Length: 167
Ligand code: FES
Image (tube, rainbow, N blue to C red; front, side):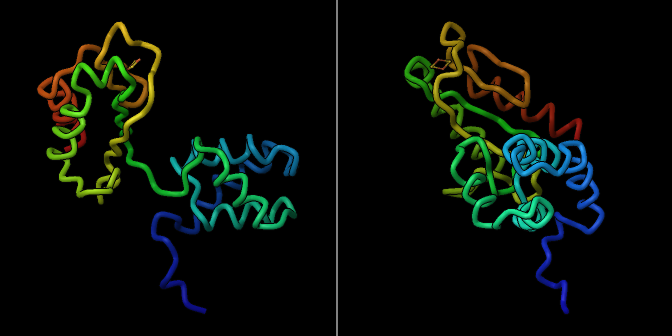
């Protein structure tokens, strides 16, 4: 058996985290959604190998687990960056130039068309609908931190500060 196709992001020891999550939820199939939520919090996405492991551990058909994971927009099966940058593109933010901020960030992070996450998994840039802070438009959120009245320069400064911290 070859492990050459194994996702390097999901090294064997990574299964320890999902075991702990399953134990914490009593390996109860009825708790599938909170389990998937905890897995996503721990891994920052739902790795396919981990979903298959969850299905086996809960004695559920894999199609059921993958079905739930793909049904809810909140869940993602693609790796996300360590820093998730959300640019609001609701109406108030859009008219105040949210897309120019998005373009500036994508250019700085060299994100090709259709890509949201940098290859080094440091950043994900995504657009979201109204964040409920329209008075601060345009709004950007990085992790838990909210930035209001953002300009492209302000957004790039925030990214540069993170890059400096990570260097
Ligand atoms: S439209 Fe951006 S916060 Fe409401």
